[in-house]
Image 1 (spheres, rainbow, N blue to C red):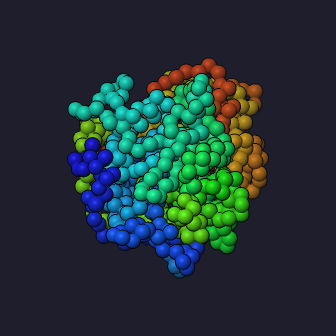
Image 2 (image 1 turned 135 degrees about the vertical axis):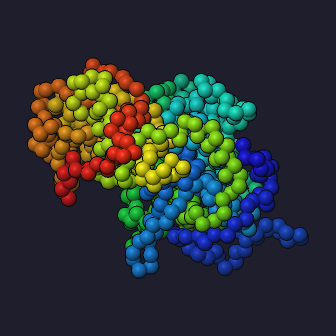
Image 3 (image 1 turned 180 degrees about the horizontal axis):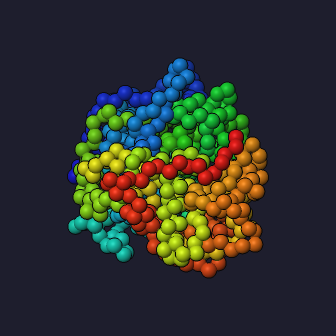
Length: 601
């Protein structure tokens, strides 16, 4: 733990926070700026009773994914819309800076809550992932997080490991790190819609109530119902994931019966704003007109008794209003990912009704800029864990001649990873024909600039771990040509119709993706070639992929039908072997051209 005030003392004495000056970059979304003319706000002082209205500050973020150090490349930047319509990028993220920004934001706000929308851990860089995300939980304790929902990645290592992160204790296999036993999270994880199949009850608390003097606000936490489709089967074994809206509405009634009228839903599901800038106005021209995706339907159906929705999962930034079932606007927010933004929402609490005066809710996303002082306790925490990770993480595994990005329909890094898995597959079985890689499994780019003392162009084990942190195995299986064609069509149909997942393909596999068409027709069947020859529907092909895909994950059920399975080592080992075999300091790997999929727009 950080060598500062213990967590329980910090919660009582927030006056010890670090003071820092920062120019906040913000986008404001407000339902209305003013309270009723008769309203006043404040708490009891001296002989004066508090006024009817009390402003409560809600600070929130989501999808941190264990990014304690500033994330690299595009993962460490946000896009900012300028007054003249142009955009610029701003470096952002890192818990040393996030801590400073949050502590500064809380100054002068006696009623302040910090909440999160899930995926605090999982798919984490080596600094956290190597230690089963104990470092991130320690950092969140130091950030004075009050409550969070679970996300899908909280289940990467299963419900039992999630319970350990909540309650504490040493890892059952790797034991304790250092001299002290892991203490667990100071904040509650909420999992209202995640049930134990045997008991039918939530595996963790479904809701939590924040109280200060006469102000009470309830929080309900859910993850997306589709979590089993994007997490390994072992991670969700014995669990059921219920409908988000039905669950929130159920527990809103429970809270109301307990006298809690002000309610915030923490939902690990999100949307896709029409603009990529963090300060894009998704209410232009009307409420919620500039956002699409699952969160829109959720927001329109969650009971009006819920006053605001803090969301996540899509890694997109937005501050929107979307009408509730009663036709009244309600704030819906997301702070992108990796700790690059935080949201500052003002909830105006009505002491007469115990509810939020929705006409006075306002919200804004702020950039976690790196031009503020680093929080010393976070620096100390990172240093402690880096000392343990350094002997493993600093080892060079390859060399690159330039940045290898992970963005785009087909990415250079996606091609590289698919080639690495094909090469490794051929080691296991020379008959391996191709490899497929899911884009969501590629968590960061490989950057040319040195992150530490390793030198430009050097790829370290830590950097490779950040790219592929899931420890999936590389699996081989046989599928027919007809099944291969169906797999490619599943990228843009079925579960992936609304949000296509374009697989990254190994060298030799080519086809045309026609985005002017709809559904499965977007994959042009006659264009599919393997090493220049048309795919034969009746032939059998040997395919390499990670264990998540091989099990039918990410909406590819046909891959789950493969036969003659052979399980190899983990996918990071495959990448390391490929980089080591195909690069050197004098002959680094160049970024692939990403030209295997022809895209028609």
